[in-house]
Image (tube, rainbow over all chains, first blue to last red; front, side, top):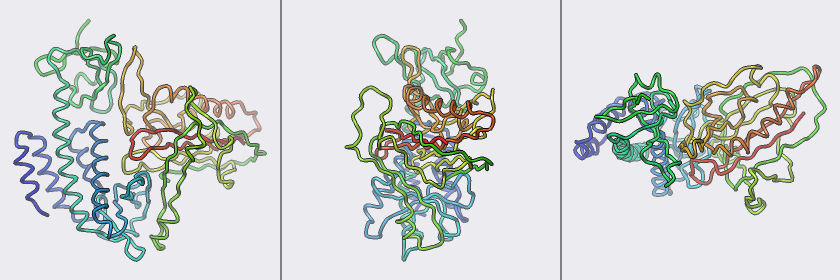
Length: 231
Length: 218
């Protein structure tokens, strides 16, 4: 594993402690993986770091684009396949996508025993004489590219999330989803009449407020924190 | 398919075809395959099932939430024309999108009377956004097979992002029709409905462009 890319990323993102810490942890995760991998890099990131729904989707798109681009560059090796996850209901089955334009909705469900023994989630496969084989080089390259793209997206997310928190603004609570709140910035309507609002995901809403928050309640962002506005 | 829940029934009714109107779709493709230890290349090529629709046969949007296609004739396997209830939900694809949901609906698949649907806010389907306009939310988490038919709450394999209009005016009328047909049956009847919902995506779009609904009543 070439660690230079991680060192470069860390040096370039020194101001962003979140991304730095995550990159180091991802590096350790990859280095220590010795058994068949059961969880994707993306899923591991989502378990470790709060990622908004929007950025979760962006990361999956970037992952697919990375795979398609690499598949195009290496088309002489034949169709490229990627193990993106495990079947949620059948433990011994893995889910494979086809890395070709127009085929992103296709799913191949394959039993573990039919996979090369070193292959797991995040592995790139090729067909060789009718059997799946692990393309180690491709797996390494696409994972490095994905890590880089995910880290950039994480930086982007952090800026966007922080930009939403505006001193003095009023926020209407609409919904709780897990450990995060969905809010409306009442000071930023999307139309002149002031009747249209975007609902955004706040991933760091205070737990003590979240546990009792109700739809329609209004909070104000003051001195770096949300406070419930009493009527 | 990701999940199959089966129950056997003892009675068989005469099958009459009564097809539910089908919602307009745009041409799209989906596929999945189930691999075995046999030659994988052949299995990949042969087993991937593709469903596609001819765009030119679909009329333009004319203000209705659905249109009938294929002369109102659904395409089900005759081997499923029975009273074995089941529910099948496709695995999510690599972009996290739902696939086909297919069920043999009957009293047993439906929630017990008086049961209310649980909280589904934990599910964030692909493309999930929200907006409020004139006090109303624009988007819904839409069940492919409605809760009232499947007793499924927060199943991420069964929920897509849709507009409120799509959910209430597009999907709900058909679900209500099926629910009414089943709940209004006589004591000695054993009504079943084969019900399949197919979300169609354009390319890598995370939002469903269209859905097809098809059903056959026993």
